Image 1 (cartoon, one colour):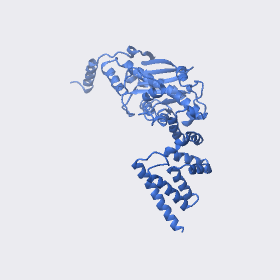
Image 2: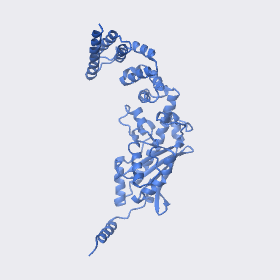
Image 3: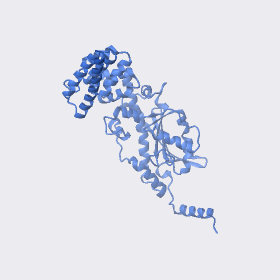
Length: 400
């Protein structure tokens, strides 16, 4: 009678016999590297960054420090210190069941972006790939797009599961999604990398494969040996890495303009978004940007409040008081009411400012001559001023 081991062995042989022979990645352009007994499959391409830098008016010799400084990095950082990283995976999860089957690394060498892509033909090849790409992660600063939420946690998991030490778990990386949202989230329908390619970087992909289809293509290759669409997957993945490098050049240019106070060189709408982002990173630069924006700062309640707060935090109370008094908006009257109530303890003057604000709101406006507010916004602001006026009236009575 056959043992369980024999039965399992027979089942394995039958399953293997039923599997079609899969072409190697050489069929869609990979080169074979030998790592002991384990083959590595690699695609290498080079891309001239000077062409893109010229179109974006960026010098490749410039440090990206102005941009990196806003992201919390210190010291001089250049493009060749960066490692552009992207993964194609079997699912959108970062859990243990998700594999990266295409590992992409981009480095800048002599004004050229060199992209290396390692393809996992067999699952057993994963440890060899992880060991091969480990050194660049240790030596350079990883740059991703949505990598803080996906690529980096997934890589940490894969190194941990394969018991390969040395991955710089605590090392800071750059996720370009966050500064992209800061600048573009109110300008475009979304902040997907493909959207920024066409709307900002002037890149149009020809016959690109959609991201959601890529795992299915890999599974079809694993199961049926299909290679027809794999070249499109490789090209899509390669372009993601190239686009990240070009987007980094864009941000380098943007923050060089900001550092040099060349605000006229930045789109007005983008500049308003950038100002919001700068508030928690560089108060002085934030103030310079908002001053440049002029009256536009008065139309955005969040920006107005941050402008007022920054002035107070930097000890410019007299200047901000003059600013509020010259401005006829509800926002300024609210700030003056707070100043009179909490700093000067002049409750009657604070109440007068609230009454002036309420008069504007009853006319349906935020400021004299401005466009009418919708009913929801009017109700919100009226309710806030009514509560403040009740409190002030009570204080006036208590001090009578």
